[in-house]
Length: 507
Image (cartoon, rainbow, N blue to C red; front, side, top):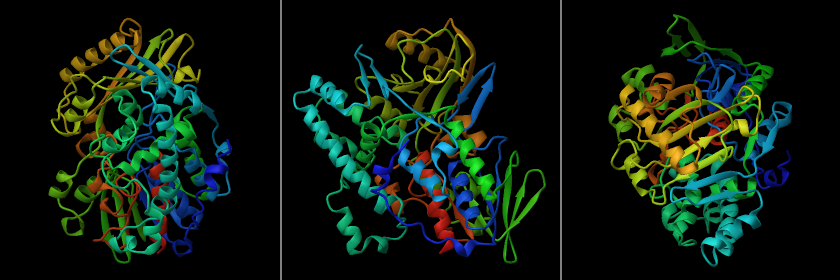
C-alpha cells in the first residue's frame, strides 16, 4: 500500500532524541500511545521497560478469542493510513513488514431507521451521485466540502498535529497565523456542515466520524471536518487479522528495537527516589527509572499513582471534564451469514439529536440509539469458524451511567430487536457465543475515568493546548502519552502522541 502522495504533504522532521540515550525509562500502559513512545525511545538508545496491567498488550485494542471466534474488543476502523506509514518509516520499516491491508468496498453501509439504505464507496464520483439524489447541488457541495477538508487535513496534520504547541505563546507567531488562515477553526461541526448540506441525512453522513472523536455535532469544533478527507478520499481499510494484527506489528517492532515488555502487572505507585523514580506493582515488584511515561488513564495516574502534592490537577478538575462516550458492546458469534450487513454498518435514527442529548446533556441509556455493527468475517475468514459470522454491536452511551446486570440484559434485548427491525437481520435464534462489555468493564479493565471508552472529548475547550500536557508540571521526569494528551483520541492520534511525548522528553 503506497501513500507516498499523502506523505509528501507532511514533511516535518523528527526532533533528535539523542539526549535520552542510556536513560532508564519505564512506560506504564501498553496502549497505542505507550507502545509508540516505547518504540521512539528505544530507537534513541534508551533502556525501555513497558509495564502493562493486563495480560495482553494493546490497551483498549485487546482481543477476545474463544470457540473459534476472534474479536477486536476495541478499535475496528483502520483510518489515516498515512500515519501508520509514517510511523514505520521513521524506523526504516514498511507497514507490509508487519501486516497487510485490504481496502473495503463499500467503506461502510448505513441503514436509516425509516427504511432507507445507502453505501459509501471508494469511488468519490459515485458518492457525489448519491448525494445529488438526496438534494440538488449536493454532489458539487460534496466536492467543495472535500476540497476544504483535504486542505484542513494537510495543513492541520503538518503544522498542528505533528507539531506540538503546548503553550499560548506557541500560537503567537507569523507562521501559525499564516498556516491557520482559512482553516475552519470557528464554530461547531453542525453549523459548518449546514453551510453545505440541507438534507439531514447528508449532514449525518458527514458527521458520523465524530463518534471516533468522542463528541457530538454541537460540541466538536468545525476544524474536524478534516475527518471527511480521511473518510472519503483516503479510504477505509482492514488489517488482515484485525486491529490486533497492528498491535502485534508494533509490539514486534518494539522488541526489535530493544523494548522489554512486562504484562499482567498492575502499577500501584510512582514513587520518587534520589535522581529518579521507583515504579511499584501489585505483585510487589519495583522498577527503577530515570524517566517515567504513563499511558494509563491520565486521571487514574494522577489520582491513584501519585501522592497529592505531586498532582497537577485535583479531583474537581477531573470531575468537570467532558468525557467521550462509553459504550455498550455485544460480541456475538452467530450461525450462518448476516446479509445484508457490510463489514462496517451504521444504523441511524433519522433524528439523532435525542441520542446525543442522552450522552452529553441528559445521561441515560439511549431510547432510540444510533449504533455501529462490525462484521469482520465478511472480509476475513480466520475470525470465525466455518459456517459462522463474527459480529459486534457498539452503542455509544454516556460515561458514568449505572451499569447493572439487569440493565444490560434489558438493553441487550432492545438492541437485538432494533437490529432485526432496521436491518432485516434477526440474530436472536442463531447466537452460539455472546459477551457484553460496558461502563463498568471499561473502568475495571482500563482504569478508565467514568468508564469512558475513549478519554476526553474533543470539545473546543478540550482541544490542542487545552488538553492535559505531555510533561507533568508538578514532577520533573514524569510524562504522559495517549488519548488524553495532544493530538487526542483515536489510534492514529495515539501513535502520534508517542512521537510528541518522546520529543518532549528530549527537550
